[in-house]
Image (cartoon, rainbow over all chains, first blue to last red; front, top):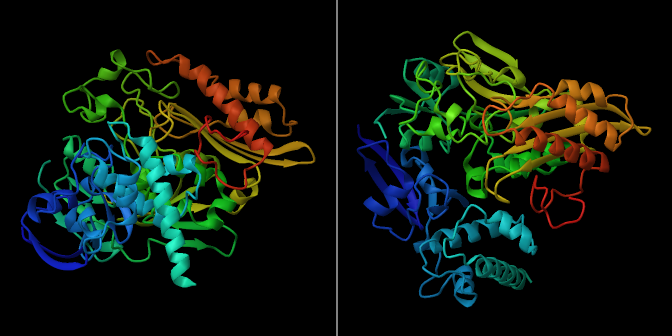
Length: 165
Length: 348
């Protein structure tokens, strides 16, 4: 069974033909498109390491069939920086030690970017922790992760205000 | 994962035809189904992708004051719809207390209704389970069963229904709209999920090919907006299924409870409407003694199915907590930790 699909991945349109409908977005990215920044942790939607943005919304790519997302716009960790510059959430993770081993970090950062876009948490650390609870960190860097997301959100809001002023 | 045929029908009629074959299964977002397929628990031979069906992703306010929610509306979109959260705050709180932000962004209303139990023995293809394999027996009965059912269970199955969303909905008399081979029909949500009895493998009232197209909240459901809470005890603060939960919706006038709706989660194979408790509450003054009496009534038929007698006491305390907080008034904004009794905000 040949399944054609078209995806825009990090701004680049890709025409893909799948030979198997079982391929998840996660496996498509990692195994077929060499975009290995997105990590496979549990592969069952429990850890958040595979978080990507689909049409601007964060989801678990391990629980998404690629063939069902024909036409979608996908952003992965490889696509968030601009030229040589880090995304504000990436920079804040470094500034606040938001990781130790780093395995969950791409998922944490994609989830943080998604969370800021959703605009539900405000500057309340408890809301940020709740909104980020789908991303586990076995090293326990949660304190730094929360601080990083809060700071990045505040920097991004300030930049946006400066731009619109 | 077993291989399958993938089809993406363009209309509801085509979808029903494609799903009416033996072994076929509908696919919405797949957050539960793909997990089950990876574990070898579900082995559909054909997936009928309904995510592109037109018109099923709308929230419609109907002329009679009722609300129609398309089956493909995403959980996050529904919970964050300001008017929805204002009119049905316990439903929004229940939605936000479930799963994670990533899963809520993907998961659909119809999929939430159709999700399967998280009983570990159901999930483990190597264990005996009457749901997966009728007549195989139930390894949960003599296994790790502290989280299993205390109401409505049978010797054949002691699994619980995992949904948070369905708990307040069943209290608000939500209606499920179904399209099938025989046309359109409606069913009270309360009648969608079945208790196990002798046939635990028959989890819902749906027939082969049936597709949930919408969920409706009747006009009266809005009347509870000022006094409605969903409270959920979990084994960790966030991103966990309920050990026990309760949705309390009250209509209070002149210092009396005029109408009460109470439903429990995590206690049975279906979202559990506690009508005996509602009768205790109706007409009473809202106070602690009446909440305790209501809680006793709600759990009067409960019995442990294993190492879970504590859930009967815990459920009563959660009912009292949910009623107390609902009577105090719906908070202006859903608490930072939705549904949690452990929020750092006083009174939440």
